[in-house]
Image 1 (cartoon, rainbow, N blue to C red):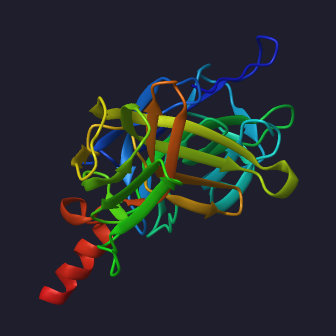
Image 2: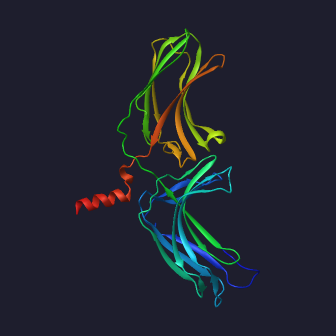
Image 3: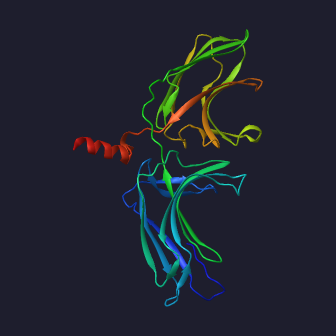
Length: 315
């Protein structure tokens, strides 16, 4: 909680933000230190409302202020550029004009049908967050309190979803063809595929399929890439023979994945790749990478905006 006091005299205030979210689903959101907190889940177009409670600590003493405001903020924080937050959304409401507070006071606030076009995300170098911020402006130092929310972006089924077919080969010693059933997968999907060995003249010891997550931040010369292996699973142990085909089934639901994010506010991207790795008896690695697109399915979690539209249609 935000508290303030000047040298032990005068009035001190504490701000509490209570969102109208008792009926909302709570989801785990990773904090910067890697721990998780449960936050109320909102979708694009939903109203964010609640109460701001300003509690005065010393009865009978007034709190002088130069205005109290509440903001709804969407911002991107690059961890290597600490002082420089990029606010892509900011809505402001005044709760009180400059004056004196004589007693603890409760204010209602509402940001109606707020646009929330991006998904909340905490990565290695970047964080995208939405929060409600209350500021009591004072002459010496402001009292500020923030309350985060989680936001998920929903997508509908992609119109085009071609299968992926690729060949990988080393001339005269290895020729493999592999096929995945789709190029776009929702977060609870199953990747189904097949690998065909057309020519095998090197001793392959084993073969694995990995999902690689690549977070890119910054731009141009100052572009940083962080690669993270989300999962790795062994497809085959031992040498394949020519004409053999190996099936692949990889369930995505068990992994911590986000939708693919491309060039969010020109600040960062999060992309996913299927990485097929072959290791020969001399521990040489041969690999082929293929980008896949991940998306979050609407379905049961249909956003309230859509539910409202459906309700209006029925009237």
